[in-house]
Length: 103
Image (cartoon, rainbow, N blue to C red; front, top):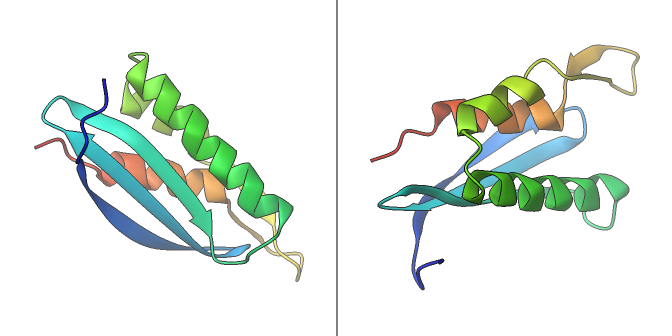
């Protein structure tokens, strides 16, 4: 069950899609929810990242380790508008999960 008040942190990540903000909230037992927000409003990318945050939250609450989720997302690349390959928004989420320390 989710507590009424959780504590967390928000990181800003540079991605080919623009600035991405990832918020991870937890209680004394560990991560409870993840929110992903793309700085550009009204885009398909923004809705995709909202969905990725929701699915990540559900997976963690179902007992999937954050490191396992990070491993599956890490290294995903995407093509930038100038045909330069860069790390993707899912990769940024992997980095955020890896940087999160419980406690």
